Length: 404
Ligand code: PMP
Image (cartoon, rainbow, N blue to C red; front, side, top):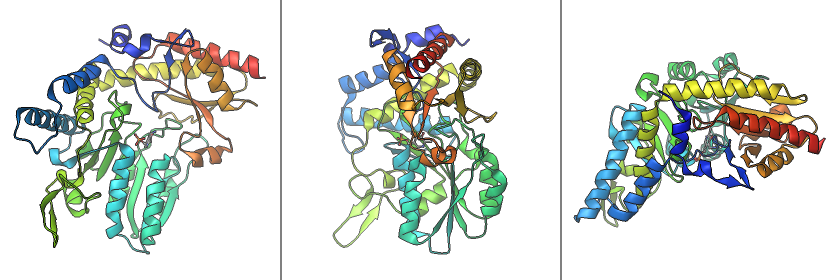
């Protein structure tokens, strides 16, 4: 039974004050908060098991290695990868995308095309632009409409036998739109293109099954899933991970090194050069345990309630406009008050202890589409409450009174 009051007890940070007011944390799309079950795992790791992994014969090294590899298995199970070595630990979504983009340098030429969407985060635009500069391949963009949805019929016309790669986020971080990835994956495969899904924003709300989706690559960050910053994952189908060259050279990723020739380690170590974020990986596993204990269906249902309530209440404010009005949304509301800069609204909300994000949300093309400098983004998580939304609504009204 979903009980938000008892869930809130798990998050120490939620009981702190900001500027003398109770913290209302609505910046979950940027980073989620950390429950004590995960904080305990971090403390326990550094108190009892801290050592380097995979190379030591001593007890601590073996304990740390076991914990780290167990975490990989938890991630495998959560995303339903067929094999644990299809899960690569990275420092986050950005690292995962760059790893794949770098690998494809070897496979692309000037007649090839890459398709991204108009709803992407910069981390799913810039690495592909860099890849196009290196290879001569062309970048094509699936356009968006006023509701903040992809114009999928245009995707169909962009696809051709020249399309080698398609990259789309499952959920837009700036607007919360849920994209029809099943359709996009199917169509990409029809022309023989590989597809990467950026799950940074969807993974906290929707549990994906990478095998059922038949996706080639799927990427996510632990810090959006109640885990720590600086750690994330890349899922890649084994056949692709075998084909791609390593991203970085160094320790851990080799089989044998001589000055004449180096051979690479098997998966997943081929992509994990150097000492990784060991504690972060273990805590990532613990964070998935925590969220699975609550249950992703219960999380999504409760967040939908928060979204519906907040949308209704905010729309009652004269001069407030919401960007991203698709029926298929996660709990993100991007909005502006007529004639007022989003930054000013964010500053007034902060003075009331309410944390929202303001700006372009690393998605400038979306802001350009709407011809605005940015938005105020309130993003909700399963530990937020309707009372907190009431505080947001009165905070926004106060900002409007002060700034008009
Ligand atoms: N893609 C999307 C859709 C995101 O929301 C984010 C984080 N805001 C990223 C990629 C980048 O994630 P990270 O900063 O954890 O690498």
